[in-house]
Each structure stands twice: as C-alpha cells, then as structure tokens.
Amino acid sequence: MKTLVAIPVYNEQKYVAKVIEKVAKHAQNILAIDDGSTDYTPMLLAMQPVDVIRNRTNRGYGTALRMAFRWAQMYHYDWVITMDCDEQHEPESLPDFFTAIRADDADVINGSRYICPELCGDPPPAERRKINQTITGWANQGLGYNITDAFCGFRAYRVSALDRLDLDEDGYAIPLQQWVQFAANGLRVKEVPIKLIYNDPNRTFGGVLDDAEQRLAHYREVFESELAKHTEFGEAVIDKLLQDSAKSAG
Image (cartoon, rainbow, N blue to C red; front, side, top):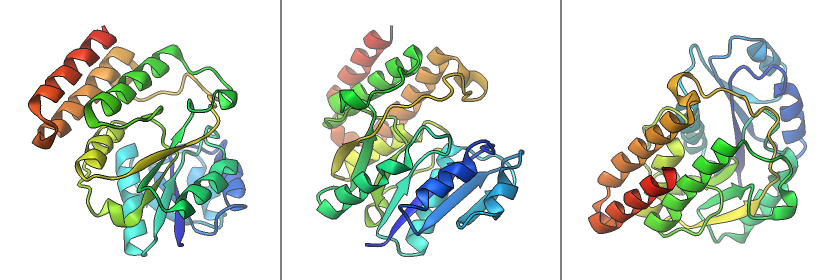
C-alpha cells in the first residue's frame, strides 16, 4: 500500500523541521506544499528529506490540498494523508491512520479531536468549537454522516476516490465542499481519534475571516452553493438543514 503524507506549509519556520523529522519516523513518502512562505520556511524545507511544491505567492489552503491530491494521483499513490505543520497534528498518530487504511473499509479516514474524551487536551477557542459543531451538524443532518469533527485537516483519502471529486475551493472553506461531494459520490467515511491541541488559539485566518460570524457566513455560502449542485439531497432536506443551522448560529 503506497501512502503519501502531504503537509501544507505557510510561514512555519518555527515548526517545519521538527514536524518533518517526526513524520519521517513513520512515513517514507512526504510532500510539503509551501504556499508562498515569506520567512525561512523555504530554506528549511530545502534541507529536509521531502519533495516540495512551492507557490511563489500564497494561493490558499484549499489550493494546497488540491495540489497534494494531484501529486498523489500523478505518482500513483493508493492513499494520501494530509496534516498541518503547526504541531497541532501529532505525527505519532500516523500509525493509527495506517491501521485504519489497512482495514480497507473506508474511502476517507477523518481525524477526530472529539470522539475520544481522554484525548481532549487543550480546550478549543469557543468560537472555533461552535463553528465546528455547526458544520458537523450540517454534515450529519443534511448528508447522513455520523461524524464528530467536520473541520479537522488530519485526514486520509483513498486516491482512487479522489477521481470522483471536483473541488475548486481555494481557501479554508474546502471542507464544506468536500463533505457534500463525499456524500454525493457515496464515499465511506470513518473516524480515528487524535489529540486536541491548540498551540496558538490566536492564529489568523486572514481578512474578514478573522471575524467568527463572517467566517461562518462564508462557510455556509460555500456549503449552500455546493448543495445546489447536488439536487439528489432533496430541496426539503436542504431547506430544513439551513433553517436549523441558522437557528443554531443565532
């Protein structure tokens, strides 16, 4: 089973060398997507035993993920695992993903920071937890999933299943597009527990997305737009879902 670990990176000079060193203890195939870093990240990556895609300018988290998916497809990987580079995703959890992959009963393996209470280390910022709960509710109520953490970037994808997706979201809202397309294409999802870590609760999303209300409104816009492309979910279900989400957000 050929598996790639892909790590989107943007201005992570503080963490990148340590994270890759730890990942390399568990994985041989590592790809870093340097999304236009302006600090010493590019120099540090050049000294690491990894493949690197480098964007001249910052093109967004969603773009970095799509680049990772395309790399995995081009080089005929069976699975690609994505994780962050800010030490909020522990490389020590990679063996749990490998075990879940070998079970061969899912197309997407979602890391969950909330499924296992004893692993809930750092309390999440209240606004981020509320937004995650809202989005998780959308995925469960509207799409028929039974997940606990819809917004975790530590995730494994069966590469052959990626061929069924048509993702074009560039920014942090890409999970909203993903969940709808997972459901529309009948992808099987299961979760593995990971530790809840928040090293820097004040990290920025950029621009208007730093405001929690505007961020949730943007996520909802992306979710509605993607739902509108997939009428198989039924307008009545969509209407109820959005009404419920509006109440919970209010």
